[in-house]
Length: 351
Image (cartoon, rainbow, N blue to C red; front, side, top):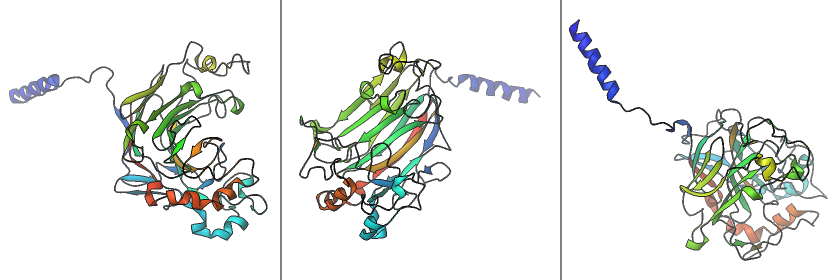
């Protein structure tokens, strides 16, 4: 009996010697190391809706566009003509997709079938979170008119449809190697950005006060040269974005929240749709993770300069996608194998 009591005392003393976790210490609550592409975690969006930017790809669930190898996720754009032939672009239809309205129609005498295939995956049905720290180790693609993104959408439209319930863009990048604004500021594969979208409706989508960028042009590198650590720290009062542990921007909304920041009391006026939330609303609800690679679209602005060949489409044209495709000899040589893929090593969420 004494021996049992003695061991109990020793055990209690050992437990007492273990230091308690410090106040505010983080706990790893979710991780993805990409041992495989787990369909229970990652839902593939299958759509040709082209988003709000009139992009040139449709998203599908194919291991040509999304796959895992050696612990790394690849999301890679491919050419529709490689699977269906070039004639299909002019006479075919994508009726096998749940793609909403006109993109499913035959494109003869309008434009062509979406010339690019890609993937968009999300944790819509498996994981969402409110507040914490997100880490993503990833290597960006390089190739003209490729647009990779790692971002977050609200799990529920608590405040209404986009952008009323918010959007968090952790990483966005234009993968052109030589791409600048008219003023000569580099905006290609050497520049990544983070941004918050918010507003009462799609007409009033505000993002400029909550946009930050990190540019490597000064050191002659791009985000396609190696893996980088992209991060977000999100708490009850602020959202902060980091690249390789360096803060690139932070938003603590003023009194009155994002309604005041967006000057929505002045335009369009009316009732504050986030009045029942916290000062961080609409970013006070759970969000899930989205990753995709798009191609083309309005994310590549009029007037910006690409070298050596200018943007191969114009929005005044009745067939911008056909123009893009038929000038592929200007941009396709910049697409070099798996260099066009966004590669993701891991994702971790701490709270």
